[in-house]
Image (cartoon, one colour):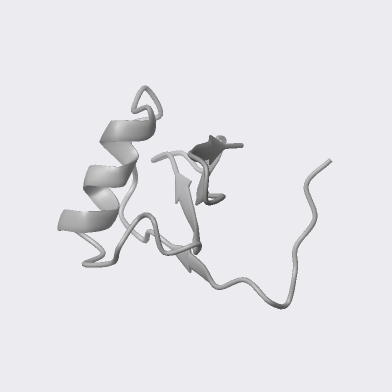
Length: 67
């Protein structure tokens, strides 16, 4: 189960993202487009063009988790 926490930061990528992207592709978008560090412990939220799919990328200290 996924729940939102007030001790985490959340960033939404406003540009539509290809949902075929995996860990590396989404981490690259975080670095190059959002200009943030993907391993900072922040939750990054991505949506597709038609707003029907969502992916969340999160570094939990041991590796990336994608929801």
